Amino acid sequence: MSVKMLVTGGAGFIGLNFVRWTLENRPEYEITVLDKLTYAANGGAINGLKNFKKISFIKGDICDPNVVFDAVENTEIVVHFAAESHNDNSLHDPMPFVYTNIVGTANILEAVRKFDKRLHHISTDEVYGDLAIDSSDKFTPETRYNPSSPYSSTKAGSDLLVKAWIRSFGIKATLSNCSNNYGAYQHIEKFIPRQITNILCGIKPKLYGNGAQVRDWIHVDDHNSAVHAILDKGKIGELYLIGANGECDNKTIVETILELSGLPKDQYEFVSDRPGHDQRYAIDSTKLRQELGWEPKYTDIREGLAQTIKWYEDNAYFWKSEKQFVEAKYAKSGQ
Ligand code: NAD
Ligand code: DAU
Image: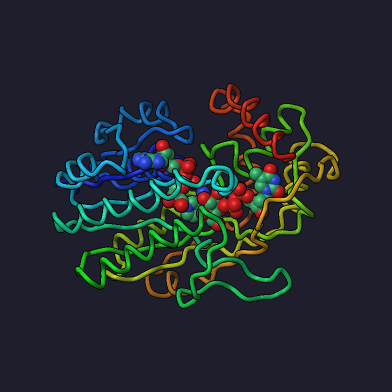
């Protein structure tokens, strides 16, 4: 018998990879994707998955309670990826982040409360703010929330709503907070695909500020296998940090992409910094590994980057028509 799973944001970067991974590896799930198809979505790629049969699609906005209640009533499990996800956008226009990330999540919570459904809420390590570049500290599930940007503060708000609904109403929910993902289908506004496609277009990669900021990179398939480990074995009410010990500074990432693309390592340029730029993220994923036995598959960032470069080379249809628009938008802020 199939288990019905509703995936919000399943046409976005991580959600789409989650849907694909689940269809390929976990045939017991019958998936419905609920997605508004914003600029960040890949509606065409969802269509391409239709040959799996066990997938259906609802175009809808999680800010609309009617849409959310109908979809949640007809499922058993909700995996909630839908969000406005890009920090730079949140600095130019924060309100869509408030609506989708906070109001949208509240609608999901009210629906799972009413129909008594299992929820897994997808969140980010950015809710903890940043760490000093020169420290060896890492985020743990006990770290205090201290978000910096409109994006991360709305994600922190959504997490707090989930925690309150767990405690006050006893909903059957878990949360996960993951570090920076990379892989196929990531929008070219994000750091790694922006630099890969810059190089493919003969544009120099762009580093914000001094390029010394550190992110803790994880391959998107490892994020998604961790989400499945939580769905399978996670304890209701618990929060799990997902990370693969992939700390690397931005300059080294750009140098590696240049080298893997057969170019001199210094062919990049520095551009205006991001206001309020978080300096370093690092995840301690001991709880996930020890309690649920999860381990990442992609432990070599160089190998993962080479695979990702090849994907963007082979799938120019995915990004080519948008490249000029994205770069023109960045150019307006000197980035
Ligand atoms: P994305 O921007 O690529 O995709 C978001 C998806 O949500 C899109 O398909 C979009 O159409 C959909 N969406 C947006 N607003 C909606 C609304 N109001 N109603 C319905 N659908 C809507 O994002 P992503 O990078 O795939 O991130 C997915 C989730 O993972 C987010 O919750 C994000 O906070 C979290 N996360 C991302 C990362 C990362 O590195 N990208 C890391 C940790 C956590
Ligand atoms: O940590 C998890 C978070 O990772 C997720 O919650 C977010 O949804 C996701 O977008 C990501 O946030 P970041 O702000 O860390 O990712 P971004 O790809 O925008 O930038 C990564 C780093 O690279 C950051 O230090 C800013 C820098 N950067 C970014 C761009 C787009 C550059 O130096 N140059 C660039 O052109």
